[in-house]
Picture 1: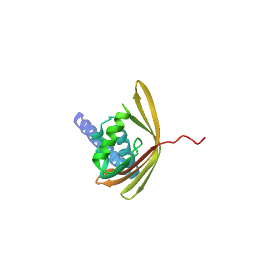
Picture 2 (picture 1 turned 90 degrees about the horizontal axis):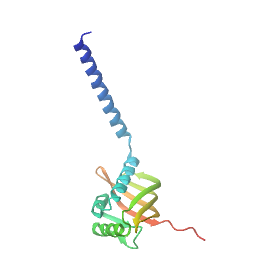
Picture 3 (picture 1 turned 135 degrees about the horizontal axis):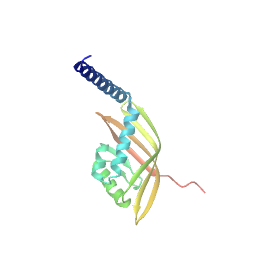
Picture 4 (picture 1 turned 90 degrees about the vertical axis):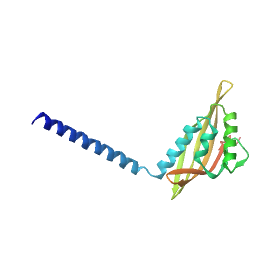
Amino acid sequence: MSAKMREDKMQSRLWISGVLLALSVSVQTAAAGPQEDVAAAWQKWATVFAENNPDAMLPFYAKDAVLWGTLSPTVRSDPAAVKAYFVGAFQALPKATVKFGDQLIRVFGNTAVNTGYYTFSYTKDGETKSIPARYSFTYVKDGNDWKIVDHHSSAVPAPPK
């Protein structure tokens, strides 16, 4: 076999390998369902939350979203109010991050509910503190995105004495 034929054969094998790899990636992507998409949206929310930027939080919420935040007795029901909640939250919890515990994602067509536990951590006066909380997020599919239409969060209460 000539060097040219070996080179052509090698290029063909590389091309076929590339095609097979691309197909396997697209099959894996197609295999990801709405539960995984909601989990990915939630993870992206947590990543952006750690930036402590109220404006960056707004794209996760539908224009008519309702927010009952962990740190507020007031319901928020428009984008300006949702932003105001995060302004206050990031002031109250400097350098805030969030870590997920167990979560239960249920999908009902173009609506999904994600319920579970998370822990907010923050640093204040040089000390790291945390707030364990529980949440329910309701999402509605908007094009390719899952937008939050209802967000309820509350601190986990102390056990009864």
